[in-house]
Length: 333
Image 1 (cartoon, helix red, strand yellow):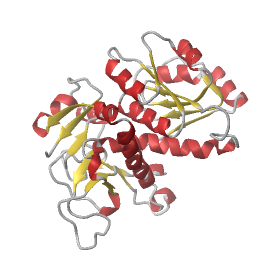
Image 2: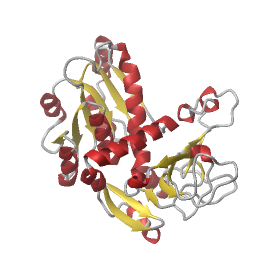
Image 3: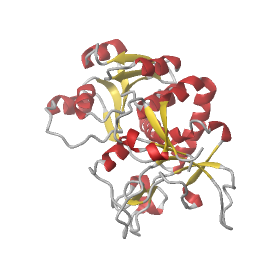
Image 4: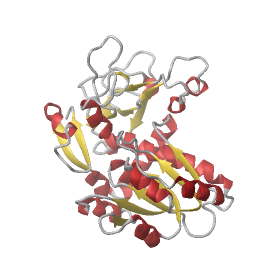
């Protein structure tokens, strides 16, 4: 392993909110955002060679013969919930010097993405959400074919939000990032560099943000804050789509105007869906788009990684004491 990214999931696992070791093990090796280099291959391997850079996928299929999703190689849509996940659920992850992996779960990465290849896995979240959006909005024959570009509001300026904003810009959308953060200068620089707009939540409430944006066609939620998300749902425009990617922690109940939301969804043909994990095609799209990002905005992409830590200092970013956008553990140089 070369690099392993730190995300909120890892922080929650090390604080014992969830996470399950493999059967027979009393510990779990964490880490699911990875970039590795192939050092040895078996005789049946044909897709990768020694020296190749690879990003590894996270989820493994359940064993139930009647789960058509897993039997089709789409364990991201598993029906049973008995899937396993590297570094999260019943399989060791990648925050270690060497791992053994099946070729099926390796995604080759061009050598010129060495610095930022660890960002591929979080980008797959946006790629899967974007692919589903394009399929869903085929219900509108004019979608992306006439008129101004659809307007997307990205909630959150963390790695998933910023990478999602980049993916939407490349796909031809008009993108605004709305983020609640005390220090947004570095994130604002990234958003400006990619040609999107940044609206800080400290100075604009949800209604003011929506007025500044105009008709909101898509919301890509990447903040994990349900209160903010459901406030923004009420600002979604006609025929709009709201994409949930965050998994909020269990807190007390919040007040939600369910009558208004339900009324708007019915009368304005709105859709809400969630997306988690990603199939091989989303990894391929993420690797392709990461190459495009580096061609168009190399400085902005590299700014997303704000801290690199050797393996012996991994607890510092895991305990949330370091700040920044994306922290990475450099397992091997």
